[in-house]
Length: 378
Image (cartoon, rainbow, N blue to C red):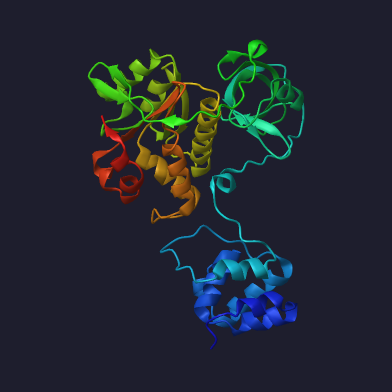
């Protein structure tokens, strides 16, 4: 039985020839191909059924039955599998990078009615292909922003905006009536600071917060095993943040009720999700933080970001991409992007990262490679 594929011959073949080539593939190559094409449970199917399902996908462009959530041990990806799939589906191989992972898209909302009650809303703007919107930090509502307001101040993805909105349907969707602030400035006074091309410099200044010595513009690791609301050391760090002349941001996912109530009482922009929230919600919180900080840093803002339980953050991202072995390329991309936000600039502006981690998680190999060994221990 044939186990390899002549890529040039396959690429240049007509549909009938491609069908013949698929029929000649071995069982392991068929299983790998079926997984990538979205065919359900390929390892439970006999060879003839696999071929039939793949050919249906080849002709129709989609699997005959939907793919369920992947369980069990990840499959071994075969050589040239991406190339085979791209040729069968007539789609190019997409290089995975931050832009492809974080691409936003949102359909235009359906207006069923216009609610009279106005709701205070805030969030990080997402400029999609067909509309601009943000997810309200407190309620999770999708809030759409009219294009004329976007154009007025040249707003784009990553801008943190606040305003009042009215309800437009029963799908937790709202529409902005008035923007009150943009990136912390009154909207009427806000003017776009053009992206500054500042060189990075070596972080050399420390923030002396009582017993803590935080490297400004650097990566700082703090070992914490207690919940946020009873950890006195962590409470001190959060209180010291509030006294700094900076944009202060907190990122924490799957928080218990007590932690969420505590952090909501602080004067800090908080990106959080409740315990047992979906991985999609947590994933979007991480993206919003990255985009917001990238946008503010390009305008010369000083930023302090505290990431609570960074191992849990990584776990939530992994769930989003349906992996259990902590080896997802997409998860690593987002983690690296989050870590790389820490920097000191020549003009004196900085982004300071403070990541908390449980002692038991300090042996996590991904965090060892990407964060722990390059950070200052608090």
